[in-house]
Image (cartoon, rainbow, N blue to C red; front, side):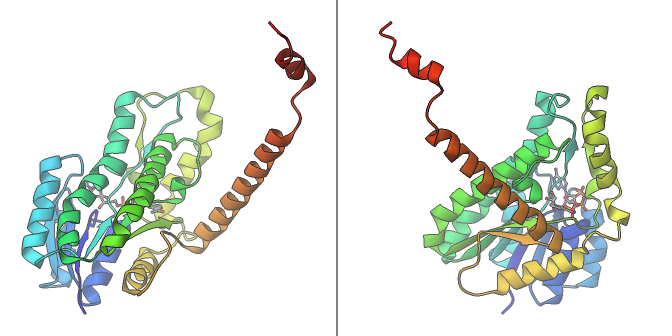
Length: 287
Ligand SMILES: NC(=O)c1ccc[n+]([C@@H]2O[C@H](COP(=O)([O-])OP(=O)(O)OC[C@H]3O[C@@H](n4cnc5c(N)ncnc54)[C@H](OP(=O)(O)O)[C@@H]3O)[C@@H](O)[C@H]2O)c1
């Protein structure tokens, strides 16, 4: 049966591929971008199934209006996909407070606001599915992407908490973690205003790789991402909270899990080790 979707960030990349796949599968899809002109082709390809809506994540009233509009046009929302996002590139020491706030507004506060706005409708109807698009950067660090990594880690933390709160209300929460996909992500990355030559060696290779993503044949295709998300939403029963998408995503995250286990074992060994003699002496010192 067709569902009513709200997908953010549909002017290009993963969001556009997902919106088109959902519409082609018979769902009705409210699609957003900052300029609705960028949504025209998608709407024209799926007449009657696509509702274009302007949305800047940083604009609280536009977020409210987007959810109100989508709900009114579709008669409710069954699936919210918090996909819209963009990155900031800069080493931790290079990035200023305003840039961090801006990044968190895009990656955390905007998506969180949309979750808050769709929940009353989902609770009232007794079902819903919230899909938050994270990244490998939601579980591991990349040099030069500290603010982006912080935003995606925070989105994953919020999603994990949300799942603990709403699963009993009939609402499913999924965090999808795409590996590398050929989209505009790398070319639309903003660079921090401050640039320090001291960090060039650690970050330059990373930035070059990201800038070239759209034309890199090794990257995944947005259509494959879309097919995986459609199948995930269609699947019945319990699904994992965090779902990596792409072969590279599983490879990276298996390595992350192993490194986490190794780190915990090393920390346990440290905790179990007898204290160094100097500390033992100090502990018995009456003064
Ligand atoms: N591509 C990858 O390899 C990859 C990997 C991991 C995670 N991701 C995540 O996947 C999501 C989609 O990215 P993509 O790769 O498809 O990149 P993309 O082609 O650049 O698409 C990003 C979309 O987000 C929208 N957007 C950006 N900033 C926004 C804002 N402040 N308010 C509203 N909309 C905004 C853009 O719309 P406008 O036209 O308005 O700019 C665009 O539609 C992002 O959350 C990204 O972090 C991507």
